[in-house]
Length: 281
View 1: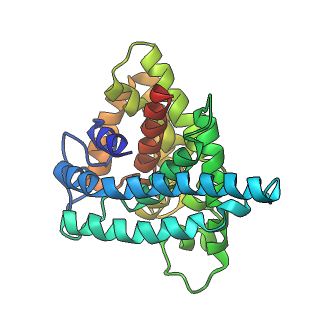
View 2: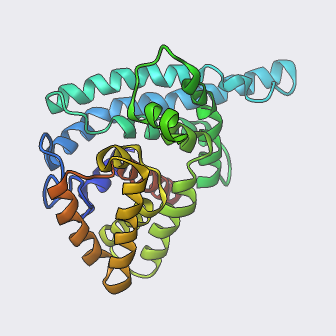
């Protein structure tokens, strides 16, 4: 998970996002902010993986005592525990970056994936599909946030009310289809074709921008319709130039206009995580 964060920020160029070439549309952070944050988050990922392993052990114990445990009952306490760890992780991130939010979305996303990987760790012949399916089961209760009036309003919750978009909660509860069906296949295809990990990452994030209803991108563009105009422009660029060239053009424009797709960057990190997991399976 930590390696995934380091690879995500290193992919260059990424439209409007922090990378090795610069800070993109962001004035309060740079490449080193992300390195500091990734270093601070390692204990969080270790805790999440341990939570997953402990949940799997509880399931084995319950099944042994009672026969087949009720479906997903053994998971019911996992998301609240991960959220408590996530609060501590956000605090560690802010201390490391001087108060800058570099990885809040990634904390939620990779926390789920590391916990799911912890659950699947003892499973023979496990695949990334198993990890994603397990993450979906852990994340399912997060959909209740949309009806919880006590929660602090976020861009994702506001957009659900305004546009009916489910944001990262719906993405997670569905088993991260943007990673499963877009980012990870693009990474694998590009690497199989002999492209560098950097260039594969560029191709993956461009495809994510074309496919994902990114709450950060919608907020910075102003509306889903404005996002669609940016997607149309990206498609036009890709018809006449390479992905790297298109990314460079879009990066210059978005950086000047204050546009970025932070949610897509988090999903790219999730795809890297699963790619690295698969290498170890």
